Image 1: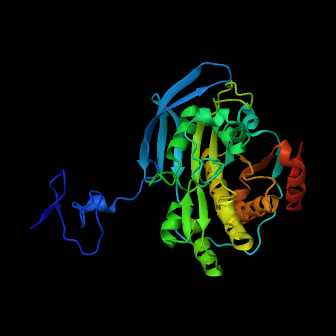
Image 2 (image 1 turned 90 degrees about the horizontal axis):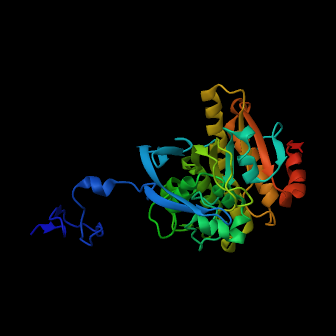
Image 3 (image 1 turned 30 degrees about the vertical axis):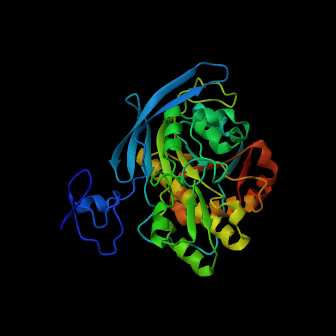
Amino acid sequence: RQRLRPGTGDPVMPCFAMGRDRNGVCGIPWPWKWWSQEPQLVQQRSGRWVLAARGGSPREGGYTFKKLDEDSGLLLDGGEEVARVICKSLSHEELKWTKFGHDLTGVTITKSEVMQEMQKASNEGAYFVLPSQLNGVDAPSPERVLKSLEECKSDAMLFERRGIRGHLALHPAVSQFLLDNARGTSRGCGLNSVGKVLESINSDRVEFQNGYLRVGPESEESLRVLVANLHKTQPLILEDVPVVGLQHSKLFTSSFHLVHLAFASACPLDQRHRSDNFHEELSRSILSVQYLGALRRAAEKAAENARRKQKVFLVPPGDPGEQYFHSRISESMSRAVALLGPEDFKKLEVHILLEESDFDEFCSELMFYGVNLCS
């Protein structure tokens, strides 16, 4: 007898050790198209946001995501465009890693605070590469899932994180969209810059949890396979985003201009599961390709707009007190510039944005690579 799918009456093909479908029926579902659909990067296409300034009444609204193609879409708030979302793989071919990085001559250190720089009118049209985990959200641990802007604003520990403050400076619809769509353990779909990489290696030794990676017993072969597939990384980039959110004082800004965003993670590996050499090299490699994606898109933007140079701010991710922090960031930037190439690098005006807490120690490390100091 031919078996039918519960609730629809659709026929189900015979089972040949293919497992069960989503209704618990053994076999290949009909039609075939349903079975072949890939997970979507954007799981929640509409949602509500609420954000109040310190001592003020809450503002609220709703966002809608409109897909343009497999790699991009538009984010709307009340019918007004507030971001163009891009999640495109770096390359179809394996990256040509060089043994050594590139010196960072021409890169400038800027001492400031991330919200302040994003809200400066002089930085309109600049790219800001914000700290995050691999799902676009700067969650403090693999277990903690951030759900609301009010949580990010009110929690003092969260507000100290540069990635969180960068989120709160944006249009609230954009920030809530990122929180709602960040790939997590409980979400089968969502934003995940290394999703295609993990699909390709198909290893049970690598687990993605709330933007962090947990990597099992290491080996040179494991590292080689992972690095060989990093060209499939999909850096998350948001363009033409209004900077109309909160200031560092937690009051709404009075400025209005557009910036572009990318996200990078220096510590995608759960610290409790790290053994230094293997995991440190993997962390540097993953950060390098995220920087590469941001710099490459910025160079393309410069060519599109015939601008003399496109301004880019790299905001170092991670904990400044962590072992290897400064050398990891510096070397990853150097590798990314080497992969980008000199012609594209000439199109950029790159700033490394340092805050008071990590300025002195980081400066000495960066100046070793030829970075200029700007007061």
